[in-house]
Length: 254
Image (cartoon, rainbow, N blue to C red):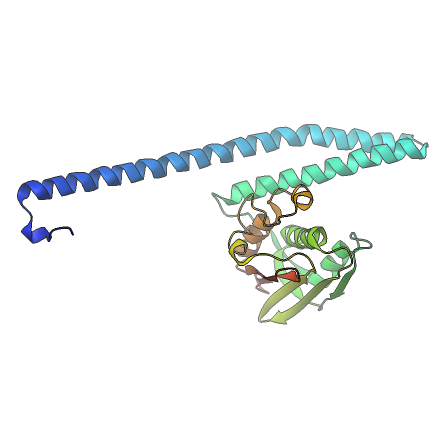
């Protein structure tokens, strides 16, 4: 048991202060070292992402141009696959850029009024034959429409990826002081301990290796950054082997 400070000699006090000072310096140095590593990682990610975008844009441009010149269905399909895969990779890189930037400065938003029902409906039509049922309220909000689309697309993509083969995906929007979006799947569910980290950068909770290979843990982190930049909240409720429901809110007037 440590002595009461009043009972310590001058020498013992000096030794205690010295030890405390050393421990504090050690802690501060460790913290600064970790921050430096994180800053270096952010810089590397930003530089690599920018370097990748230029050749990808060239691949997309030339493959789309060649598609216009090819009448052979097989050649056209090959070029179309190249173009679509490149666009998907470009989208992932942009997500990576956005998430990396959001780690050290707020996301920039360009807010306008738009109808959430129209936007969400258009995105859903891109997910054909995915057993998606939806009920969308006719709600206008003041928000960044491009960022809003990113959140909706990522959450639907996430639900499709982890949904069971014959399960349904249900989307619901409604008013509860704020605009509310809910999407439920019939997938494997999320463990309680993973619910705390599911929105972290580069984190995936799935135990299914095949499903993990189709993502890199960026989408949900980006969703959180965008929703919180709008002053909203995002969370998940889940039961193992039953499914998950992701829910986010955004203030109507930004």
